[in-house]
Every structure is written in C-alpha cells, then in structure tokens.
Length: 247
Ligand code: 13P
Image 1 (tube, rainbow, N blue to C red):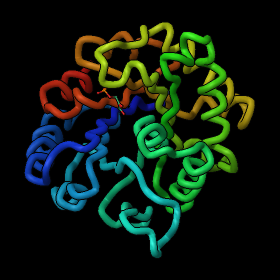
Image 2: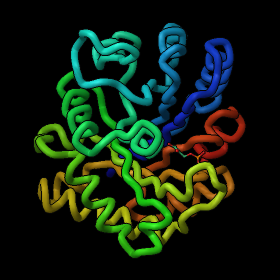
Image 3: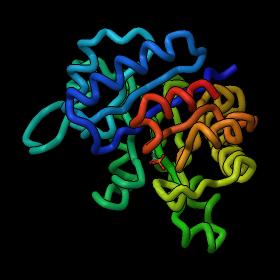
Image 4: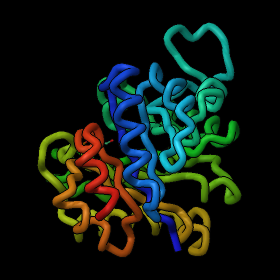
C-alpha cells in the first residue's frame, strides 16, 4: 500500500511571517491525517518553518542546484536544504522548464544529487496544450520520466515521487478528468515497471497536479494509480488545503 502524499507548492508566495502563520494552523488541523503532508515553501521561509518543530507537516523546497557548493550565484545546494529541515524537493516543475529553460538533462543531474544527499525528489512531468492536441501526451511524459530518472538506482527509486502536472491545467481552473489523469499516470507506472520491474514500480507514488481544489480532489484520489496531489493556489489558504487533505 502506498501512503498518499499531498504536497503544497507555494511557488513565489508568502513572507516569513505569513508562511509561519499558515504552517502552524495547518499542522494543528491535519495532525491526525493518515496522509503525508508536505509544504514546499520559498527558500526564505524554510528555516523559520523548520524552527516551528511541526509535528505532522513536512518541509520541501521548490528547486535546488546539483553542486555541493561553489561559485553559483543565486543557487541553493541540497545540503543547505537538508540543513533547514527539508525532506523533499520539487524538481523539473513546468515553470522551471518553461520560464528558466531547464532541460531534462539538468533536471536529471538535480534528481541524482538530491537522492545522493538524502532528499526525496518530487519530479514533475507534463504536457503542453499543443502536445495534448497533437496526441503526444504519453510520449512526452514517458520521455520526461525516463530522462529525469536516468541513473537512478533500484535502491533509490522508492524515494522518488513523480507529479503528473498537465501544463494547461496549472493555475487555469481547468483540470484533467480523473480517469484521463489516471490513464497518463498508468503509462508513467508502466515506464517505471520497464525500468525497475513491476514490484518496485508499485512502490513509487505518483501525484496529480493542476487546479486541484477541495471540490475536485476526490475525483483524483479515487483513481487506482493516483497517490496524491501537488497543489498550487489552493495550498496557500489553510481552509482550502485542509479541505484537500481531508478528501
Ligand atoms: P495550481 O494548483 O495553482 O493549478 O498549481 C499546480 C502546480 O503547479 C503545483 O505544482
């Protein structure tokens, strides 16, 4: 049985004070939830959130660089993330791929380094609207999954979370329907089975992301292959995020 994982991606939102207030309330309200709950906050808030000693909610970052240290102005190392209490790190988010031109090759280097350091990557994959219309969805997500995981060992794969986020559904209010997302996620799991064998593929958690809200979370979570959600906008407000976690 895979433990569901609901992660909030706060993107470039919240000052330290705002982050602390939301995290504290969230931690109280989901204390008895059986699902794993993660907040991926901006770098600037991680240290303060870690100092809260949250009981239930785990911390994640939204990006990192793959070097240990050095002359990489503006970048953050995996060891720095561990130092401020992160267990997870989102890698290859479509906003990083599109706005900051991150390639599958770069994302793969980050995935390998995160795992080597002991961080659990949340590897994001997903197609654009044009790719969907051209019926390339499966090819795109399978290629992103395969390239993102190149060199990840059988021992490491269970520590990886994959997030399927169709780009046209991010922040648009449009969602993939549950069955459709389940089908794409099934093809991701088949790819994992080809790479690592069916038994290990069954252990990897695969989330859906893209306009997830309290009102539509059940549609995704009732699908056999969907193990959680990566939530943007609706993770910013305690009430909404709690509604999703209590699906
Ligand atoms: P929204 O939930 O705001 O659509 O964002 C999804 C997302 O990009 C999470 O990583």
